Length: 220
Image (cartoon, rainbow, N blue to C red; front, top):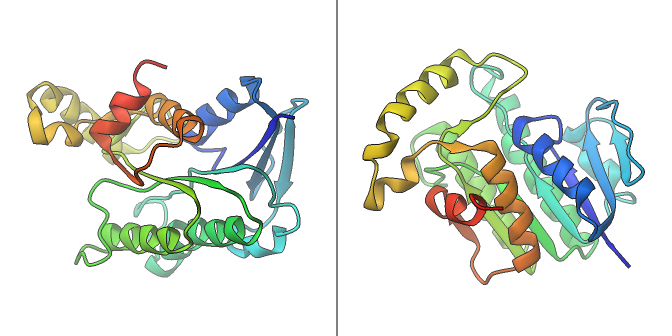
């Protein structure tokens, strides 16, 4: 019998790429997506649940499967209110991990960020670090936290700051070597590839820095 995957953040850049991969993967017979609005996508494997992700616990009876892929994330520009920002970037992934544990889901793969640290003085880094800490505390058997650098790819919305950053990173990427390789910008498709691969391979480590994401996902 095939597997069931759960995807959060399937409307975003990386989430959309990952969703397409899972739908095409014959190992999966069902892919569930939870989102605040319909993607208007029709596929025989796809099951869509629309509602308020800030109240994810209300989906508990449907939040069942073999693997959870969490691609949730916003930006300071898009969500200026820090309280709301934290409800999204901390609240949704941690709620998902708690549901996964409660429903005995064995694999949880989540996108965090380079520099995540629950002790950081930087709000963004601290929020991501606090999220990681709670997820690891759920003790889900196969937990993988990806910490990508600047994510490259074609987005539906125009993010000026990221566009400038991507141009700058394109210039400096070749010079980031050795211990600096993890700061290289990374393609969203490479991240999606790595998430997909990690769920299959189930390695014995939890934190995957950006250079390792690149190594795992570059050739799939």
